[in-house]
Amino acid sequence: MSEQQRELQEAARRFARGELVELARELEAQDEPVPADMMRRYGELGFLGINLPEQYGGLGLGHLEALLVLEQFACVSNAVAFPVFEALVGPVRTVERFGSEALKAAVIPAVVAGEATVAVSMSEADAGTALTDLATRAYDEGGYYRLTGTKRWTSGAGHARYYVVYCRLSDAPGAGGIGAVLADRDWPGVSFGKREALMGFRGIPTRDIAFDDVRVPKDHLIVPAGGFGRLMSAFGLERCGNATQSLGLAAGALEHATAYVEERRAFGKPIADFQAVQLRLAEMAMQVEAARLLIYRAAANAAHQPDGLPSQLDSSLAKCFANEIVRSVTANGMQIMGGYGYHKDHGMEQRVRDGFAWGIAGGTTDVQKTNIAAALIGRRFDQRR
Image 1: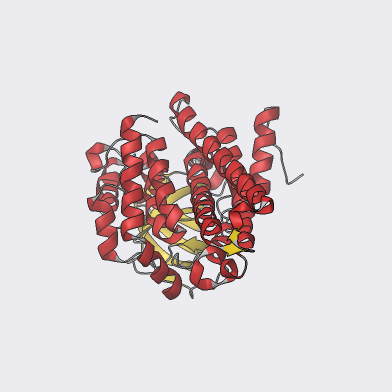
Image 2: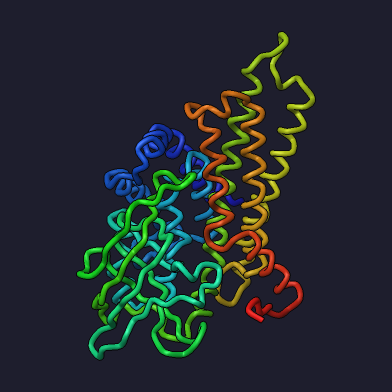
């Protein structure tokens, strides 16, 4: 890393460890998202604009710098890191990459300042991994689009101001009719379902969204019909962000367990002196370091891609590996800590619960493996036939 990158990483670490630890406990206990005043603080310190263009208030730095910051927040908790994830590697990047100048000027500065958040609304009851089966439709009514349908599993639903909604914009079958529009929470016809009760992800509200003949202005079109491939091309960076959320959990678990084994004593000595504990710690450290290097490589190699984004192969390798090792690392951390690891007051069991989510969200680990195989062989596989 360069000196600037190290300084940025350290600034994020100081802030996260100094101001967010107690907040993370509150979000977990109350299952509430990061409050508005702290969101503005994120914005004031520049953490929501690391790799967003300077013309919209961002810092204009690279994707690696963004992931360095995200990792430090995720070491504390996924909930406090989620606004950073959404701004730097999530749906805001779709708006920045494909939206009109007017739309970007209206949305991105508000995100960078911590005044608004953007969520992505993709899945439906019958369209998850098979996303091209989605049925939500935006009808062209001349002066506007009429958006109708119901979305599932939207993280941030009800809390976020804006939603990148994947929908059908024409009658073309499969991916050919799919594009995306940006919807506003406060528009007539937008409503939200009950808060989902999930195994983890407390502090990251998840709900259904219903669009009942919602009028969408024409300038809120992000990608027209037939642009599904373009939307997916931007997903490489989101995969790296997903992987970094996993990495942060795992790295935090390793740090927590390492401190614990030096303090905890058994049979008259620190349990770090026992070889069984040493082997677990070593395995955790190897997995964390390998995941970190895969993520950093994907971000660094993006500079050599025509679109400046991580490739499908690099990002899928990083996401799949990080998604798998976070489950192992956090479980080992819980085992090392024994009863304290299983106790809610000590935080390790929360890492276990949160860790399982990332291998489901944003494309399952099995989907990533088919992506990896496709990249290695050089062709896509048709799972429908």
